[in-house]
Image 1: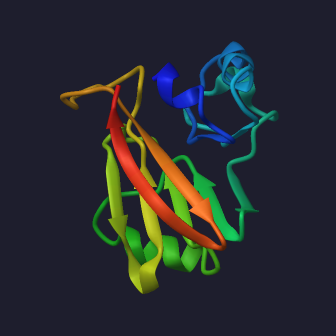
Image 2: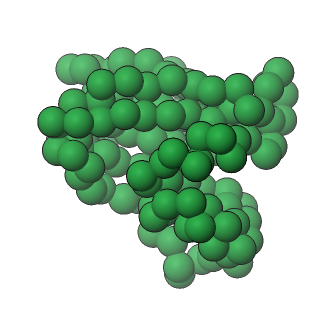
Length: 140
């Protein structure tokens, strides 16, 4: 995991940070943007439930729980109509797909709690000139 963080310009955390020290540790690598997860009792009031921002002209939305996979693309397009990319978490199931109208839907999985997944994962993104030029799920 750390080999990817060493080169990061920005770290996105899709919730379930659990303890504030994780944000401090990640912040030692790059600025962090995070959303509140259902296990973030200690961080309630400190992290927002959603975020909307732009990086290099790419409009990014973040939410912890995007709901069931069935209907997710339409639900995320309705919830974040202007987002080019929606980053979400909750299930810990890695998900990297293009939804409605080209909206990228990305769940990085988890580098620490893989649950029923075969591997710990995270995602990397490269953005420039208003476009996501590369995105990939990484086994860590």
